[in-house]
Image 1 (cartoon, one colour):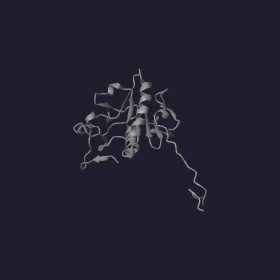
Image 2 (cartoon, helix red, strand yellow):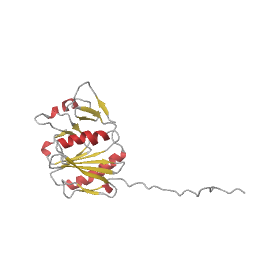
Image 3 (spheres, one colour):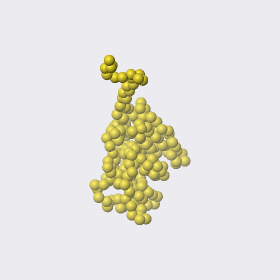
Image 4 (cartoon, helix red, strand yellow):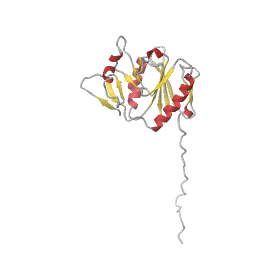
Length: 215
């Protein structure tokens, strides 16, 4: 699991985050700080780049913009400044249609679409705690990709401003549309490397011996 930075009774904010050394990669979740190093592995990166290429191609010439980690998203609490935020994430991939919320360092407020690609160290944070923050702040669509299981979980914001579960989808051969961006169909076959072929050898009949027979 990601290493947690603790101080008795302390809740960290974006103001604290901005004072930390740049060599670390930290996220703040409900005031708790998590060290997200080491970085993601090869499969995580391959899947991320495969998804990014398709999203970027679709968005070319459109007002919405895509970003990827490491780029901060600061979730704002009503009536409070960004420095007071207790939720500062670096989603693997996100799309915003509100470019006026972008600064040189961060996105201030919730993106429209987020993809998180699970890593063993961050799975529980991504799947439970960050998902709750995304729902609370009105992320319109959230995909959670499991690169080793080759599945994607889909959540879409409903009329009641709560996430509706859109199912677990096997990624092999899957083409899935991002519902908030009609026409953006993600071909997971272009994001995932081919499934390795499994070679199964038929065992010899019971009682048979390999090699030369005994005279």
